Image 1 (spheres, helix red, strand yellow):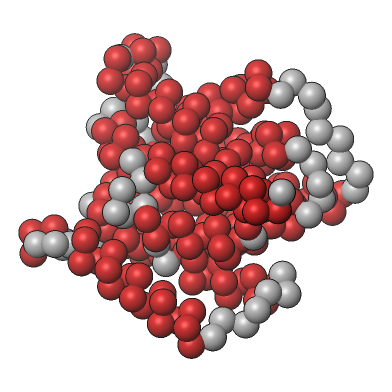
Image 2 (cartoon, rainbow, N blue to C red; image 1 turned 90 degrees about the vertical axis):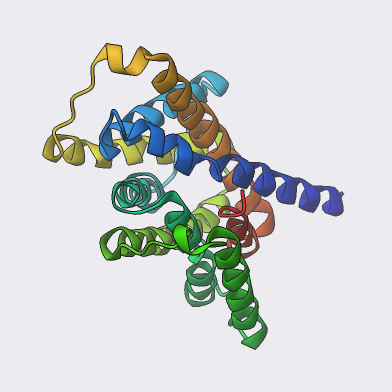
Length: 258
């Protein structure tokens, strides 16, 4: 039974990364029409509504501390991570962002050791990390034309990787509370959308219906909203619940390959 549960965790992580690995391309397409914050808001509103349809039951928390964990997870994993990633894509190549985001497992392991009582990273961890990054770079930058550094975009991608590591650590703490994965993900989305509101005001949010229902835009928004947000956050949180934040985060190494 335990073996089957572990296998389910690995499958959930793999499916998540399989879909997330293509989101950079969809976002690049949408950035021709929408701003980063507009894409972000639309996709997570879609995801939030889809999760309500999938599980209409309310989530009743027992303390302000629990509520604070969800608020922090929404701020980091939804608002800040995706805002940084989407803005990074306006400055640099999707391949650059994919490679840089792959450093997230490094930070996840460090934070897991510091705050979750995990094992201290040893030489094998650092050696494996360097080998993985070398392999990813060779695949992503197979020819000189593919390598194009942009300090602004690349640094934003590094910041996104750090933020994602914080989110993964928070997710592990939340999973220990024992609530349903869909309800947990929905509450995280709720806080992510709340924290996004100031960004909407500052970044001149303006979306027309004609932009949204354009076939190319609508297909990409539905893919990001229903697939990459609603489905994948549930499967990722499930994987973290079963495998732990560090083991699940290793799957991020596959993103640039996909």
